[in-house]
Length: 341
Image 1: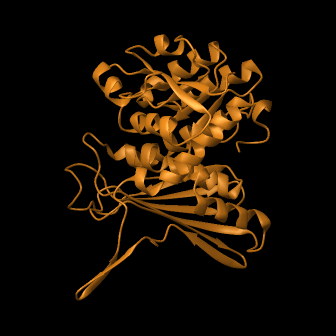
Image 2: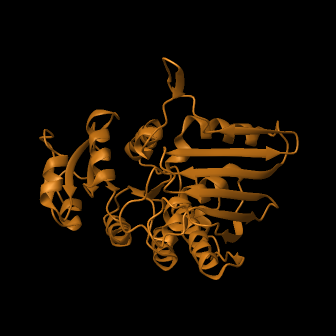
């Protein structure tokens, strides 16, 4: 590889444009050499001022563009499987935003394809593993000072849901981050899920079951609960408290700027995930670039993406049935014996 890793970015929407900005002006060791989006105007706007980047409407054309040495997939979920398999066929390292595939069957096909290669090529974009607070919590749990983890209490709130957001997406889109974070923090697999549905908020669009309360069981005997509320109206909030045998630790409390005016004081509340986790996204992409330049792939693996997909599907079935649903994972290939990161 050259001095700068040549990256093709697939998708120039909200997430893709942010990654293009990040690769061009924040992280070191990389340059954007190709961008693909079905909407050429989106792609042109995203690469404005980046003279090294060519614009394409087809993913394959971007992957085959001169200078491409790695791929960042930020296109809509249904396009991920095809893009991952195309990158594998070309031997290109990949950073793929979640979901790795839109369903567990597709995720399993990606898992099997990479396992056949006998080496890792893909990292999945579970950026919370790169958040400073989450990393401190992980280190605290790993060193055992608080004793064995018993429970995780999680909160995931958004100001409002985007158009066409469905009740199932509260689990398979929003809570997918908690699914991965819980597996990573605890070092345990999730074995069952139960989704409970309180009375929907009057702020939720008609027919959207929001909020939801999700309960996970693990193979290590811990419990994980998640309050997911995507139309809370006041801010983007993500919190996690680990309750252990000898203490507890919580991350995600709002410690931003405190603004005081006449007769009132208040803290700023982030309104968007790109604000709350901007540093995590920066660290994630930098780590991926650094590893790719060394010929390595680190971070959340295809196995992690597959496991999250299976657990999320079990959660959707629980949402629909109202009962507890067991999680059934395929055998873990030897390539992923050590887990993700």
